[in-house]
Image (cartoon, rainbow, N blue to C red; front, side, top):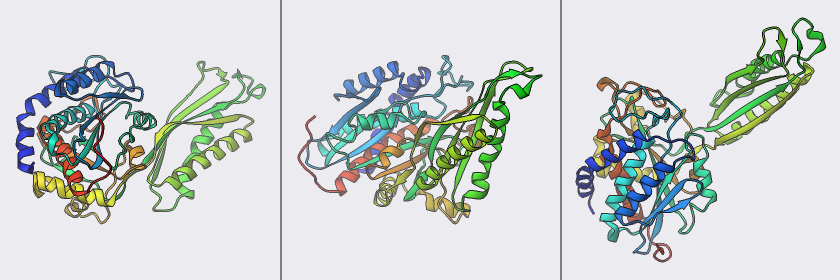
Length: 416
């Protein structure tokens, strides 16, 4: 296997990968409810000669290689869409109120393309490559669900890689940006604060307890955490996105509910914010004769890029694509004049895997704004440039094979 060979073969698979992507895009599904998506992925893998197995509520895993003694490398694609009604002008749009506005259809199609490449070179794989098709990334639950069902075991995973396509990027489609070592995506938590009062007629507020007044003071006080309790370099964001109470203009309701999210690049800062939110909400509610309960729902930890794997990924991608279409975050910063490695503000539940095994996240440019791809991820008008698909498939396959080639043997051939 050579870099040029993988590139050439990936280009030959372009039409198949594009076709698969368009099918997945037109049949978008969300969360763990991926019945059609999983069926399509499973059947496509079986047609290639794989024996995919279910993992967790709606995940799929397949193994490539295993004929030679070696380590195990995982490559991941998420499969779920968003509950957004599509407005993009494409002839394969989704019409069911769900949309692949984050590009997960691209990821799944690229990993299926990589699966085909790996099957073509299976006798050359120095170990085992585990293909992970994941549900429920958008709600930060799919990765952990698969881990709990044994994703990283049988055989045990030694390293992992994910790719995320990026629209509205000023780089040629197929350009890869390799994350710098350390944290590249923040931890995330969703929360709900329920303020319980006692309803009454609006003309007699003294006979009740106003949860709206208490909630309003809680909302303002929460901003003090960032303004007065975090250091300058404690990068974090606390957002309250909803606030709901009551149905009548002349009545004080029993309950006010607000919800929002937290993002933090440090696990200690994350824990501190959650602790202080609870103290503030409960303390202020009590001072207004109300009660407050704060519930933290789905979330994910920080995504940590392994130093060695980040360096290896950069080397392999440059071998494959050339230095002109492969950049490290550090190189990208030098081009823009930044002094520190940039970090994505978007969280990613691949973070759960990065907390368990050495991992790396790659960004794949898939839409230049000057060519009409000006809308960002999660927008109902976002489109992705399919010119990036062949490069994505090649990067998945080549990076996994090269890492196994350079990182020695472990154990015996995997039973598949």
